[in-house]
Image 1 (cartoon, rainbow, N blue to C red):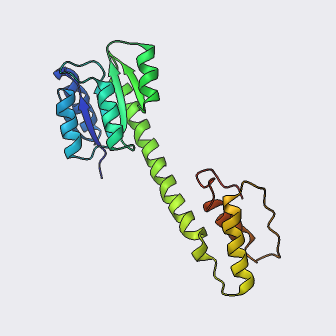
Image 2 (cartoon, one colour; image 1 turned 45 degrees about the vertical axis):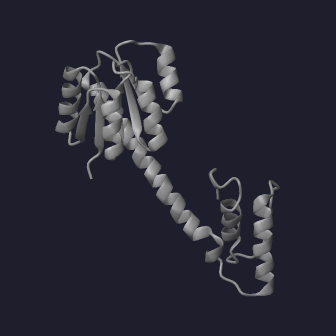
Image 3 (cartoon, one colour; image 1 turned 180 degrees about the horizontal axis):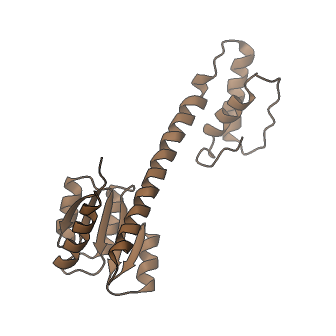
Amino acid sequence: MNTRILVIDDKENIRMLVSEHLASLGYEVKTAKDGPTGLKLFNENIFEIVITDIKMPGGMDGMEILEQVKETSQETAVIMITAFADMDDAINALKRGASDYLKKPFKLEDIESAVEKAVSAQRLMLQNRLLRREVEKKYNFSNIIAKSEPMKRVFDAIERLALSSSTVLISGETGTGKELVAWAIHDNSRRRERSFVV
């Protein structure tokens, strides 16, 4: 499926230039002449990337668009463009979740590069999410099969240890499932979002 991009800018020549260039690269592009129109389009469709000017007439600037887009969809990348190069604006936009910040006049290659970077970051995020889902499926308690009383005690220990911040030593002979137990502790703990190093 094509990456869908929304371009919001009050200058028609910028909208047309950016949208035509990105469409020629195979992206699906829609445009809006102001913030309210752009947000209406955004809420009616799914866009992976929003490119928006910061300063626009009509009572809604790019920062508000960034905020509302991120409230609706954290995954959508927002690229900010402006004719008024202000370091504070750039830092503020990046802190609020913008994926990039470009100064007008920009080259089409700059927009292209910012879009490619955003697409790569989204792919990586999706791969990480799928990988985590696979790992969670593989290493949750349901994958450790046992009916004996000693193993039920191991399950109880895993649940207790997952809530603890203590260091845990897991011992046993080769093939007894030490790594499965380690994964189960990690994936049921408050550290589950951090990396697990075997």
